[in-house]
Image 1: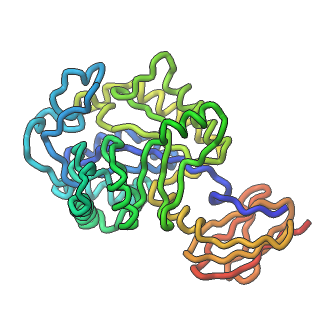
Image 2: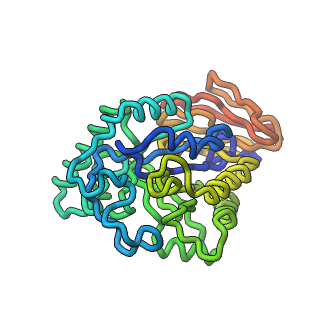
Length: 360
């Protein structure tokens, strides 16, 4: 039986998402936090705040060490209460570090609002939302020289109008799954995928797992065990797994070195654990591009052992499972056996028709 695989080489996407990277971020903090992750080839997607405000009030209902904060803890103490806006492009050392990390494929960057204020994408005026999005995109592109494919809403708060604006501008979004979807998945009544499409744009709706020393109140469940359980559920379903947190939490409250050492130990133990699985260590933009290309493949099955495909967008590392030898016709690239029973075509141009068959 010949089968088209959803993911490259059948590897399940594993994403690390670190929010709140801004002008205030020191690259040495990122190097200290992700030393082990990067040594093992993981990619960290940083959600970028292009023009952060220094006077954002804390999110209502903060508990623990954050309960007494008068301003958002992603702002360091020296700038809290300052009405000034701080441009990430003014931190040239950080920008150079992130661009070099992108070149080495250890960093990815996506957009995390404009100033990180809670209400900036809750307006009922479409023109105002578009203005803020355009400003955020302009600053991001000027700084990092590419357009992000995914928008992460600050505090996971948005309106349907803002979602509509993102879709019209060809920007995917990342939001937490709805309560209904999470309940269905938890009860195992229905396994809903963590992504969908709108006009060929991938949108991610995910119940993320968090190693969050300050914000992630784990109760009686050890963070390693909680993350392991969630990972195994996603992995078994062949679905994307996303691990999310904020780098500044590990340095509470903006200390020079990591203070939350137990949580770092748990995070590294988890990364060591998942490293033995068949995972695709990827960034959000990379997965978004892959899904857009995969979603545009037209597939016609001829028999159990033959499939005819047509691509609309270029795609790399398209994979098939087969009990026999897998061959492609109509392509310059040949199929390559990437692992037992999995065959991969490395490079397929846009607007290409081809046939894939396997021996019985």
